[in-house]
Length: 379
Image (tube, rainbow, N blue to C red; front, top):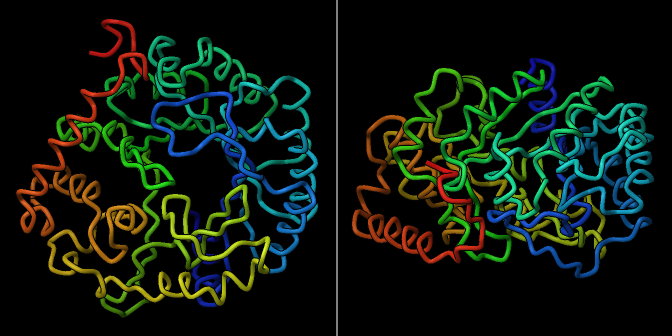
């Protein structure tokens, strides 16, 4: 994070301003990624007028960074109308897309509208692996063709790689591909549960041996998705720090107007079809509950040796049953990085073993046609 952005985040925190909002325009998608946490049916997306009104309210609330995502954003026929409105409001706009629908005309408009960045998921440098994850034949070629063209138009492209059992040996190839194409590359080693609470996707998380390989790869230093905790105020104890920026300087809005602390924190705090965005941000009881939590309030975690450097996600903890509790996925990452078991792992040795066993069973139970790669595709 740049010093300027860090200063803005600090001021936003002090003034209770939602500096950054992630807005999903749709859950509809032209891919069917095996690890996706979304329901792709349309249950009543916000209209063009509703989204424009929301953007007006967000601008009034002080939002600066607006990330437009989905689903696939280009499936909305009004996408450029919405993007133009966002830029008129002077948002710093970031896009997340699979880019398969981007052609020369769309790329030129993105360039002219000065979007900050375009993040495109690439799961493998091998078509047989990437396409088996998206379940769309030819999807790797189409996404890579779009990346090359967007880059040629002077746009900032970020290649995002999500690590899972299906592509666990391919991240070096994706990184090399990004370097060859002259674009940034990030790596996210966490598969999250579905928004409706279904945890079957968690079975796609890689095992400890692969995590250890990733965390000890010097080429990846500074190249994974950033941890979003906020440092404690100067001179204050680590235990007074805020566990995460969710609900403090950032939040998430679904295509149906539901407001959550974060896209990985499925706690509904209000709906913009019923309330003003700023009122939900400032006065929602659930948002303020999230906002009140400090590191010292976390159960189990305060007694853990990893407490000051853990990448604990309160959203993942919430999906496991307690937003003030530990996240087993982050406990595992801390253990892999250091070799030291977390307090949660020590206290729940039997349940931890059962969780790992259950996830393994779920992996083995996945239908052969779901995300399966051709024989020999993954070592």
